[in-house]
Image (cartoon, rainbow, N blue to C red):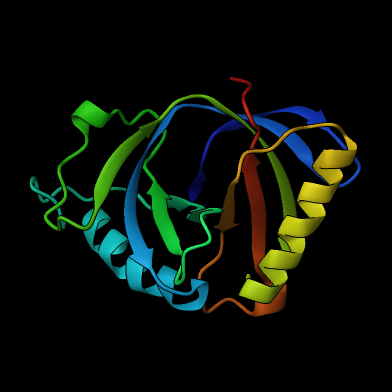
Length: 176
């Protein structure tokens, strides 16, 4: 089974969870494109990185999810940050450098987020609907959210759409 990004559930609500994500390293590619093409164009670059496309020719284990993140900046086409989470215990200093300059390594600190799971192919329309539902539910629970939205896909694209498992993850807004 594919390893997944580590988190702890802090509280369960009717239709979402409040989670604490543990620190991790991600390999990320920024793509200015529509959601439907951004993830597929970035995926091959990221997959190449973990499949020995790095300075030490080291193979890195695949993890889940594949994350497509976007900040609300109203630019067209939107900039998507597509990333793979590196295996648990990875540190920035010990990760091999990518051969491709489009692939950037980034270390994420502990982070508190809300998360809502859903089944089906994570199309732009379905994902947008689930984002709206999650933001509305969090607002009802008086949880302030950041402007970042993450669409997290856990299954390969060849798996039948109705069986695919996905999550919408949104970091909480930290006071100034």
